[in-house]
Length: 601
Image (cartoon, rainbow, N blue to C red; front, side, top):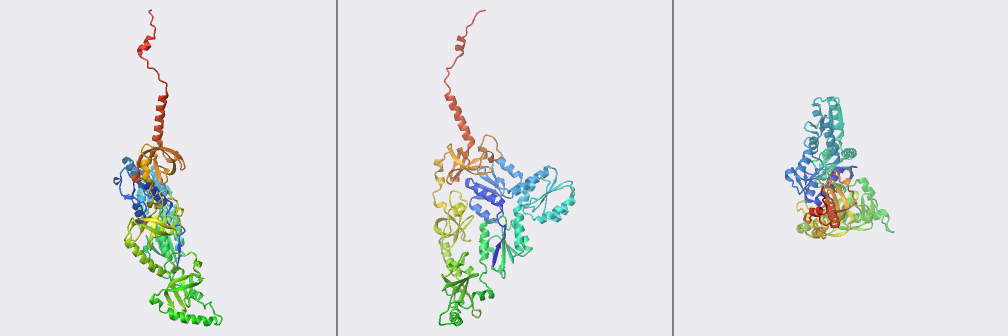
């Protein structure tokens, strides 16, 4: 079975931006998100493991915590409430959603009746309605649009994940309810691209698999689009795949919602590619198993072939039931697998050679494999073998042994099996663990390949182990001395420091002080006057001097102030200027009067 991945699938710009902002924030301060950051429970769980707790109201947030506004956005009352409580806000609202919020507010200010098309209960729609004011009307269907009254002015916009054709239908209906209609097409480009790619792929495959959170609006839309064209299954993880879905399937399609991370898509793709690749057609078999090419001088090709098949057939006949392991040499590379010599020509499908996907089969030519017969048809001279089933059984035994003895905190040795953008998969003895990129080093790295390559042997620490799912989180940097251990001694409050601006966020700038140690200059600590944007005074790469105003190594947080440093320097200069003035002898009134000559008139 061939698996095709949609040209556009997975994280969109807005979601990736929100996650990046959240992970940067939690590195430097305790953080919470107002509602789940994105609609994907696997990602939310991973964020919780990194320290980002989900809250449902401002009352649950303390002034020590950074409040992350999720990608769906919120109404203006949330920002006002946070400001009133003195809560630091990190706004991770998707820029496309922000645009919809702005247009909704502007339309309401112009006196237009605002219509928001989308799921009324979705947090994105709720947020947009907050900006549009109390008079705004949410609608979800064409029938609801038909029930609207007539208005002198209308403005309509859409939830960013809506179907373009549904929005167009509602726009046409709204034209009948006003003489002045303003249309704001706020459907996200990324959403439209994913829907278009899913539709094109679904037309060419036998079955579609859509991966994403079941509570994700854009994922549900993708599934509905695909279901109109072919059999479609919506899943959240690879564990939900069922082999029977792919019976008699030649080509399967795969797409994913905008809130689905790469690592979940990759797991699903890998599992789908391994499903039911054992079967080959009789036409293919006749090409694979012709008369043997090995001949002896005293025998003709036909005589030798019959002798081999007679002797081999008798020996191989009972191997399917006995599951006996045999060894055989690879004598030829053919389409879809390997031909081995077992007294007759046997076939090993590519998917049954080893545990991992194989790019180049030529590496096995001349090698001896450990095999078990999985199918035998002597009448058609068909013998199919697998080495993978043997390796899987051995790995299962090792896995069980490892899982029974593994505990969080263990130091283990493993081998890098696969690299992904988000981390590395490490075999620690029959079981794979994930080394997330954020747990590789205290310094920031862009890709795991900067530190590791496939085949590397590394020592790691088990950070988290879920007995039920068998999932293991590993750490590399945890075995090294944290640069934060010496922070309290090196950067006490009041110290003047110099560093380079490494990244800029909405609420301030992070300054690199040492490898793995960044300090935050909050936007309010940049200058003595109010700024709208950090970029007004700083850019990445700038060298700055600042004063340490807070140092909490246990929270991995250093707060810096450029404003206070300037004030201190100014104050010191004033003192120095005063001290450098020449001493002036004090003069009394008597001294002055004594020098004045009085004359009588």
